[in-house]
Image (tube, rainbow, N blue to C red; front, top):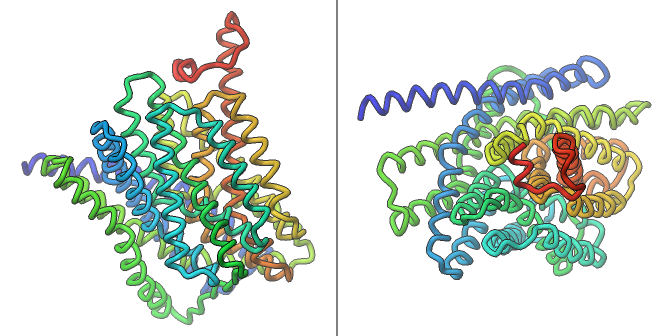
Length: 512
């Protein structure tokens, strides 16, 4: 037993070292961009810069621990619960448990609290509860789609028709916030769990398309929050409010430590509240149904601890160091006579910042494993970076011009839905999952404050012009990943020219 535990610790250290290297490679580019801006066109106070750098260090360690915890705890829990509840062959069990899981993991999502604070006309508990119910309902729909093998394309078309039809009757102050909600609720807590749950449900199917059908859960679960907020906007027809981020004032190193010392207890409590429902659910399920060995349970518990401390470090670094710096940079750059430079700077940030999203690494790894390397993690990463860069460029254009978000969302989603009928279904599912994954905590806590600060400096309407950054980030990967699917389809046809020019199947993509 002792030797086994020592071997486990040695493997954990090796994996943690690899995760730390990945986190370092993800965070350094955006840190370098901010430093270049600080020493050139957008100087910031030294105390703000120092706070930002400390936040970057916490971010690196937090990402490393979180991704390790996601692999050792969140993913195994989701897979085992999904497979076990489906083996019962009772539809009511699948519906009940999947709905509860959807509600629990959504309430456990820290990014949802950020959204709730921006809509003061709706009580926080009402907003969080409605969004959680929306995610729970659509998680049930997603899992039933896997079991009954319903094509994802037609479900996406139908639900987005409902979304855009309903949005015609909603006050404009809620439009951007509603579409942002679809992105913030698919963050670092929900994505690993929901995607693993899909794998677990798909694992009981014996057909060769089961693994591919496990994708698409995040895509459908992103629609639930949008509908929930749109419906709430009809019930609470008051406009939201914007609270500017406070730039930290630090006079010395002791004051700097005090700044983080005050934040740590807050996030220790917040993350504990977020993880407690998941831990309690696993404990009950373990006693009632799973009956895992003590060794496996201990491994999952340790993984939950990694997830806990990783998220505490991550959220503290992002909210204390990154958000204020992002808002201040946006204000400084927008105040320049050549404020059009916001667009290329935003695109550059968008290119690199998606690499710092913890859930992106989880998605890339699962995609590479499911497709047996047919979709390399590097290709996924590059496609996501392109999509997010374009989306931030469009978001900065909105900040500068005040163009309605509808002029971007309607053509974007229309093009994405048309592409869904031209590419293999696996790419469509992965693309719509990628949209929810790319719009995680880094987008909500750095790029959104950056846009808010710029909009405030330009004298625009922050609620209608700056909000929507998360929605734009969630939309563009739908196009870039499906275009990647067209490329792979073309590549396969070139390697097999004797085949008829029909659309290539998912199985052939896997074989390639």
